[in-house]
Each structure stands twice: as C-alpha cells, then as structure tokens.
Length: 71
Image 1 (cartoon, one colour):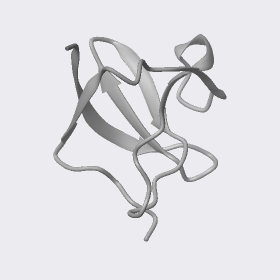
Image 2 (tube, helix red, strand yellow):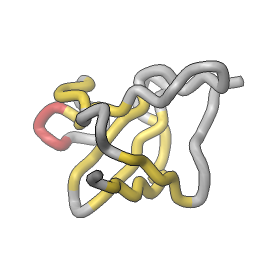
Image 3 (cartoon, helix red, strand yellow):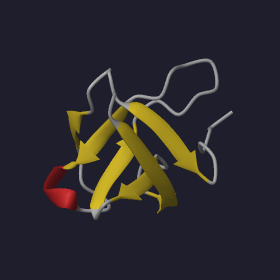
Image 4 (cartoon, one colour):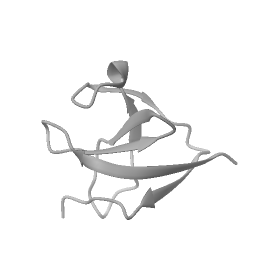
C-alpha cells in the first residue's frame, strides 16, 4: 500500500486546506469531520489551482501535523 504524508501549508482562495508532499500540492475538497478525506492534486501544481486528479483509494494518507477541518 502506498503511503502519502501530507504537510499542511495553508488555505487556498476557496478556504480548502492545501498540503504538500514530495513537491506536489494536494487539496482536501471535503474537509469535514464526518467525511473521509477527498484528496486531489492541484491543477498545474498551483496553490490556487482547481482540484485535479484524485489520489488512489488504496493510498494511505498521513497528515502533518493533522488534518485541517472546517467543523
């Protein structure tokens, strides 16, 4: 199983949490406590880029320091 360690780096212009791992930007498009993380890459690897490709469901995600949640 692939493991992805995501480091929180800030909120994009839609207040979605943006993370980085291995030089690639990721976004949690549904950062609510009751929901499983929905992690996608950022289009063109731009901080305010649109969500792009979802990561594989088989990928284990670890948040550093923790998952940023809206509620």
